Length: 382
Image (cartoon, rainbow, N blue to C red; front, side, top):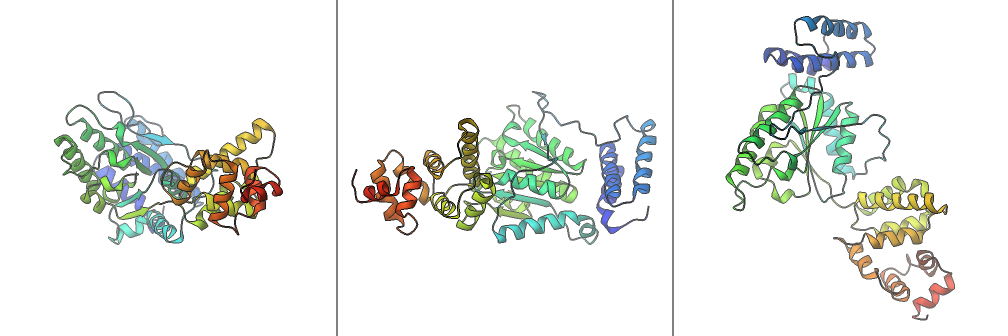
């Protein structure tokens, strides 16, 4: 097999595993390299590597030729510390981001794809990405997208489950998941990351938590470019400053902009056949809503269509948005005021909001009534 820069990353990891006597790492990356060669059309080299793996079973402890998938477990509860996320045939709607956000994601993915060459050139540090922002803004979806783009397995560690009441056990659990990730080609996704990365000076926390934060920092420093780490938090204000600095890439995921909401309604509501005018209304009314909220609205509309046999109308979407209106955002607060208000009051408030957008015809559709009725309501008539 002729060495290539394209495969240097795998070769480096195989050698690293051999020098450290890490059998799982050697086998996992050798198998990964064989699969990569197969996809590149070099079936002969791939076959040679697999034959070497089979022949090694008499010298190494017996495992399957495929990746070793024994998950790390908590030493007390014996519950797995990570779970594998199935990515095969990923069919969920596209991730919706602003261009500046896409630039960061694509740079991260590009470096991860060519980490072998970059590593040889000494240009790769920690391949780590921190995603932060309100709940429902797409952090988990983006982690799945990145793993799918890189054709890597995704393992999720829910860090609130790593916390142990036994002194020192939490740090051991953290070490176990990093060792696990370093031994195989994968993306390690640290969900609810703030559970262990809180500010070390927090006077409300015990000394054990401070030791846990230090343990995480040390492990992330040690793993370097050997693993691909993505962390997500809804509470970035809780993160220790030293933790922030350990992530080479950081991406804020906030409430979607007007253009992003339009794309989200198109992506999630594609089968609902909303008109262009309907979508303009929904985009305005969903200001401050997350992509998860818009996805949930469209899902509920499609469920109604199945159960009732009737095509969902704009009125149905309006009702669901009002139901979901608690939270931050100008439109959320506006809808919260409409929730429970009379149809006449609602009509006047909508007209005051934007007379061009909320025409009498639009108000009629939002309430499922005739245009003449909406016209009377706007005048305060019953």
